[in-house]
Image 1 (cartoon, one colour):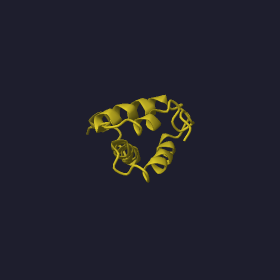
Image 2: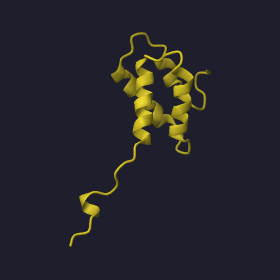
Image 3: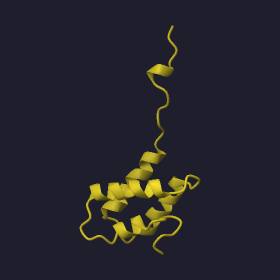
Length: 90
C-alpha cells in the first residue's frame, strides 16, 4: 500500500492501522474523514470493499476493520424513503 493512493487519498486508513492502541470511536472519526475525502464520483462502496480486502487478513480484530465492515453493511442496507409527509391522506 502506498500512503495516499486512490482508495485512501490522505492515507487515513493506512495510518489508523499503524496507531498502537487505537479505539473504535477514534476509528469511526477517521472513517468519517476518509469518506468525506473521497472524490464525489468515486464509488464509495467499491472502494470500501477494496480497503477491507486489503487489511482484513492481516488485521481481523482491529477496530478499523470492524468500523469499515459496519460502514459497508450500513451502505448496503436499503434506506426508507419518504415518511409521513410523503403519504397521501384520504
